[in-house]
Length: 313
Image (cartoon, rainbow, N blue to C red; front, side, top):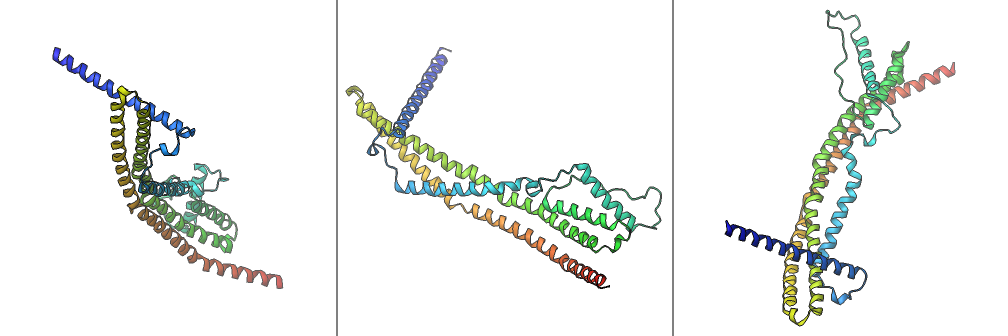
């Protein structure tokens, strides 16, 4: 038991010694950093880092800033309602009523005169949480506008009502494509893009911070050697040598990590996924709109012809 206590005491003293040494180094490097910031250290007293290291630092900074610049905008894809009109104050019940009204009109139009067995009366389909995107808002607005026109006396002949119904149908296709687009962007681009920033780039930045700390410790040790008493000269010289070895090691590690980050092909792959998702979405939207535009144009030409004919009489 006595031997165990002695061992424990030895470990405690060792840990205290390591902590004290770490604290001393931290204090000295902090003082060194303050002196440099205040211009109290001449440039030739600051250890010069390899040019390769400094070039890699600049490139990693550019890569990190490029990621941040893209994320500043593309993070909106994490929120579905990024393009939803802010002035719309729709409640869930209002959206549900719009959907229900559309179904009731469908039943009245298409099931008129159809014998229904008891209990088979048309009911509203189960309601899902309405999506809040601009295409969904356009779908609901054009559908509602169409129903308002068609539900009036002689409304079935309303060309504008029919055109709005076609527009609603096109926007429904666009709405579905929009949801697929956002999911694809999040999975293929946004999440891995953020992961690169928070992992490999962040690891390289931490390695650079370790180099900076080591360089400050070395320059602080050099200053200590200059002012060391004769009795402490050998110890101070040993501290400088150890600090030099530590800086060389940490610089080599940082260079390796920075090269790995810069050679990583993942960001290019992620950007390609963003472009692909946008291409699919806009192609789908163009196809949906072109599919109804010709029919709406025919209704427009017919309406204009009828209008001019009525004015001639």
